[in-house]
Length: 482
Image 1 (cartoon, one colour):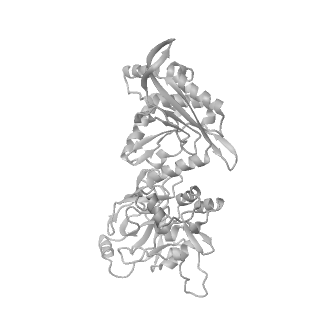
Image 2 (cartoon, helix red, strand yellow):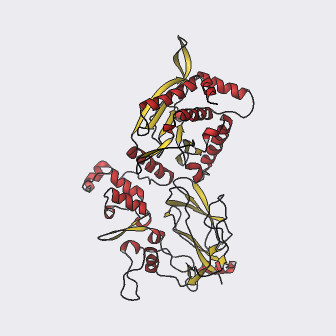
Image 3 (cartoon, rainbow, N blue to C red):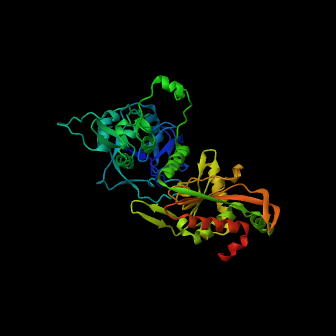
């Protein structure tokens, strides 16, 4: 007899709590193999294909394309050991409602599985436990499993809270599947009943800032309250509700509304958090980059792989961070400590069709200019293809932002939280410059450093920026640290 196993949205990377379904790769009734990708999802970090750890016939899918699901929510159910004809029968919706699985710790048998893994992340997880089959539970029973037993006086379960009684999707096999947000959202109990929030961290954030969750309108599935909803409430002062006339005057009723989700939403959340939590300051300097450009031309003329300008600037950054480690750090306010980091994992801003992403070059301080060039090229191409993994986008300790490619001279970068600094590089253009006591036309670039004033004072930041400028003007200065 086939077992119906439920595959849930796995943890896709550091700090990620939800993902948006971009495209289903399988349909109900399809036969899938172990580790076959079944859905393409977009997270705040990247777009990834999610493989299913079970082999069998797909009996149900949860969520339409464009739906945002929390980590741990059901994605699909698979009938393990079913034949193709079984899948066809299931797809037809005839017969009795399918059984929903329940883990059976006492069973010694196992179903073939590779664990909840991502493509390229290995399949060595322990095999899944065999599950015993029982009749499909009504929505209230499943909610009870997720949130604890209801207080009842008999065998009849109490009605589910109002927030959990929304209509559940009906699977193609004839049974009823509970909406993910009904089962996996944690609740903050208030006087008027529980409020669905996406995670305990959101509930903690609301509690710390005295935000009444009952007064919020969740932007997640079925009104699920996300972290962004709480942060929006913190930024918005309490005002009286706008009248229809006032809405017409401001234009909010007629204006186009673009959802802040996926990469765009993650960027909005991260930049807002940076401005809210980090007391930043910016200093800048103009530098004569003529000699740096000449040195790069000489390197490339000597043969071998071409060296990029970004790689040379990265090499200068790592040398400067070795002299000023205060800027390669993060701040732990709970412990009231500055954590100076031993390795330089260099992030760089990359503009893509999906928005701004910051891939990370791991151990940049150990790489040569040639190695940095190759890694920048690999990550940039992956960013354009939407193929960056969460590992490629996390763990940065310092960011290099070459906004000169957009044709601008200067900027005041916003620090990539939780890092402590970002170096911005403008365009390199011919300008009048005093060189060796005479006016000349030189290739000039503006360098900007935004830094967390908690980790250092202006003297340290100025020393870092001056060293970078000296290396740009006289690349031979780098020879002292090579």
